[in-house]
Length: 633
Image (cartoon, rainbow, N blue to C red):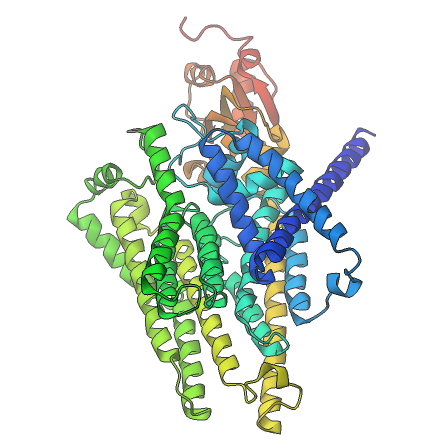
C-alpha cells in the first residue's frame, strides 16, 4: 500500500511539473509574440532572442542580489503577454496558423518532441554535473543568490553562470528535478537549432531545410562524449555562436535588429563559460565585417555605422566584464579551480617542468593525428564536405563560388581553437590531467560542431544562389533545369531526410540505453539511500562504497555532495587494513555514515568492533559508536 501511495504521489508530482513546464513555454511564447509584433522580429530568431533576454535579465538582477524577484516576475509577465496577444488576435487567429504543417514543423517538431520526452525522464550521470553544473543550479534554487566567498559547496566559483541561470529559471517555476534541468538546457539548444532556419530565404524548397536538419542531427554524433542528458555547456557554446551568426546574416539589411540580436546572444554566450569568449570574438568579427560592408538608408554615413558597431561590441562584452569584476570583488585572492587569472596560471605553470610540457605537446600532437579520435574525424569530414561542395559548384554547375575561401577560414578557426586548448593544458590544468589530455574530445567537439554549422550555412546559401529559378515567387515543382536535376534534388532530399531521422533515433536510443543502465551507477545508489536533500548543511558524511575507481576519481564524493547537499563529504572503499582503534577513530570524524553497497569488510568490522548490524542505509555515527569505549582510552 505504501509503495502504491508513493507511486501515485510521484505520478502526481510529475504531472504538476509537466504542466508548469508547458506554462513556462507559453510564457516564453508571450515574449516571442511581443518581439514579433513590436519589433517585427524574425519568428525563427525570436525564441533564442527571448531566451537570451531572460538570462540577461536574471543575470543583472542576480548581481544586485535580486535573483528571487526576477525569477518570480518573469514567468508571470510572459503568461500575461501571451494571454493578451492571443485574446487581441483571437478573431484573426486560425487553427491552420497554430498547427501549420510543413517540412520545418515535421522535422524539427519531431526532434523537439522526441528529446523533450526522453530528457525529462532521464537522470544526471556525467561527472561534471555533480562537480559543478547541477550543484550550482541547486544552489541558485535553494539560496536564491549567487555564491559568496563563504560558499564551500561550490568549488568552481569563477565559472560564469549563463546556462545555469536558464536552468534555474525552469526549476524555480516548475520545481527542482533532473528532468526539468535537462529539458531546460535542451530547449535552449532547440531555440538555437530553430534560429539556424532563419538563413533560408525560400522555405518551400525542402532541400535547404533538410540540409540544416541533417547537420543538426549530425551534431549529436560529435557530441557523443557527453550527450544531451547532462548540463555541460560544451554543446551550448557553439550553438549560441551559430544562432548569433544566423541573426547577423538574416538582419544584414537592418542594422538595428542585427545589433540587438548580436547583443542579446553574445551577451549570454560570454557568460556561459570562460572559453566561450573565443566564439564571441569570431562572431563579433563577422558582425563588424557585415555591418561595415553594407549600406542602408538608416545608417548612410560611415561614422554612424562605426558608432553603432562600437556600441554593439561594448554591450556584447559587458556581461562578461561584469562577471570578471564580480568574481574579483567577491572572491578576491581566493582562487577557485580553473580560474581565469594571471596568478592562477603562474601557480599552475610553475609546477610544469620542460619534460612535462614536452609530454603534453607530444601527446597532444599524437592525439589529433590519430584517425580514431572523433574530433579529427570531424575535421576531415568538414574538409571533405567543403571540397565536394566547391568542386560541384565550380566544375559541374560551372559557377564562381567563395566556398573554398570559407573552407580556409574555417580551418584557420579550428587550428586557432586547437592552439587555445593546448595552451589551456599547459597553463591552467594540473600536470596529471594535462598529460592525459583530460576532456580534450569534449573541448574539441565545440569547434567541430561550430564548423559543421558554418558548413551548413555555406551549403544552404550556395544552394539558394544556384537554383535554376532565382525568383522565389516564380518557383514551383517545374522550376528545374532538367528532369535529371529534379531527380537528383529529390533523391538527395530524401536521403538527407532519412539520415536525419535515423540519427535522431540513434541518439535517442543511446540516451535511453544509458538510462537503462542507470541503476548500476553511483548517482542511483546514493540517490536511493539519501534521496535529494534540498537543505544546505554542514554535516560531515562518509560514503561507504565498493566502487574503488569512482572513489579514486572523486566521483562518488561529488555525487554525495550533490545529493547530501553538504561540502563535507568523503567516500571510502578500503577499510580492511584498519585496526579497531583506527576504524573507530575514522568514523568519529563524521556525523553520519552512508552505506550505498553491500560492503563486506565494513559490515564485518562494524559487527566485530561496534557490535552493530549494518546494511545499505544512513547511520548516525553517534549511534554506531554508542556501544564502544573511547578510542583515546
